Image (cartoon, rainbow, N blue to C red):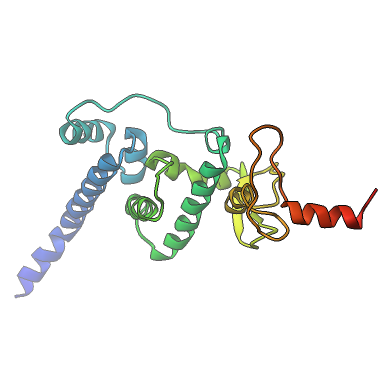
Length: 206
């Protein structure tokens, strides 16, 4: 029995290496199906660029598209809906930090959770993967919403005191009493209802 144990332990590093590569390939397959780009797949799984490209071609039936990964926050800032989804992704990254999963598997699970939580997916998996880097690079910071008191993320020079969810909510609700507001077809939208506006005028007639 002893020789067999010695032989088993002698080959265990090789088997561990083979298993690790197999798991990397499985993660790469899932990332490809989610729409990840080749550079992201290689970064997260450690696979060679040629291997990832070959996998992509075999799974999708065509060559991987060219293109850069996101490196600025311009896309995220174009709407409050995108900002809200970015905060959702950030919260999911925080929740999955405690699981100690490999980076590739964590992203796969995070993006799967995100896709189930929202009605319309706005962030593709590559943009979702870039969210933690926004904070790591100091481009974005964590803030506290003055309305709901929940934390959210935004650019370093952020001037909004409300989170994206509250900002969207108050486009149609009074900021003082939360009553519904009928938006104007032209001109600047109201931020408080007619009743609160009238009370404010009575208090400050000038």
